[in-house]
Length: 193
Image 1 (cartoon, rainbow, N blue to C red):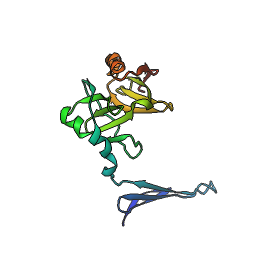
Image 2 (image 1 turned 180 degrees about the horizontal axis):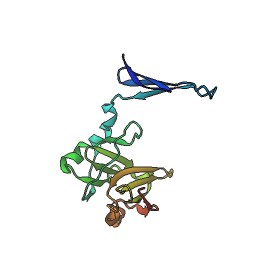
Image 3 (image 1 turned 135 degrees about the vertical axis):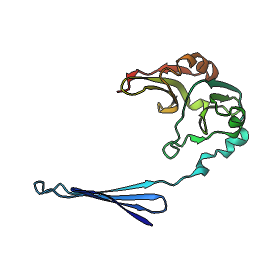
Image 4 (image 1 turned 180 degrees about the vertical axis):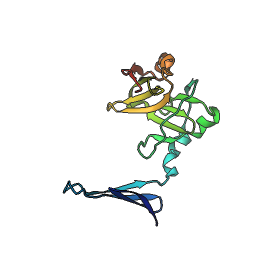
């Protein structure tokens, strides 16, 4: 166990404990002489461990059949926080072998799957659980803006699967609909302020 003395201000003391990549933080805010109940303590526990075994979908790796693909041109990224999203997996080896460093959406007609992938990660959905796709364009303002592609599942949950520059997905709408047989809608645009 490692103990780190955190910052100390006139009104606050903070200690960190590293318990084999489990981070424990204790923060105490001092009382003020004119506020009788202003002192408080907070405790935060964060897991910084890696769980790479959770990222392999061994069953699907054995059965994957890439039926059709749509390759997206440009700079794209996909979510990587697999601790918050169980759909995020390592990109299947069959996809990486054939489409190195390419962003793509693929269908697997044999296994009734649709996948979205870029770089090392992918999200794969059963075709029956997908209701539609949705595009959100975030217009440049103070920030650089961007575009996000979502899969909307039948339980009305939005799953962000890809991110690119503003309007990056607009030219792919008919291609995505043709490839997946799912409707693509647009969310209301807003400025990146």
